[in-house]
Image (cartoon, rainbow, N blue to C red):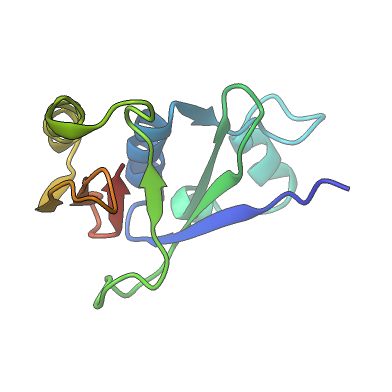
Length: 144
């Protein structure tokens, strides 16, 4: 039996965060349920007020492998370090300075999408190195 999981992010702006993570992970927006052409049609059919339509969003892998990621609006901002974070593979077969150069280029790219670079961890004999980033709402993730 295959276990499917969903990763959930609390968010101030679910749509913006969904757009960011879809770009980072090469995901796409989730389709509306069967029988509905759009999410707006689904929301209308279920009596969800129009001012609540932007309270959630979700993305899924383009190739069907990986978890669904759900974004839900919450009133409070992020206030502390994540207890769980995503590691985003960038160049799995590379090592050393060439690998770190690729990580730096990806970090630069994600900064243009609203991410913030937090710190760089240099390669050691125990690891390849990584860069800690924060998404547009401050959720930490690592480029590995």
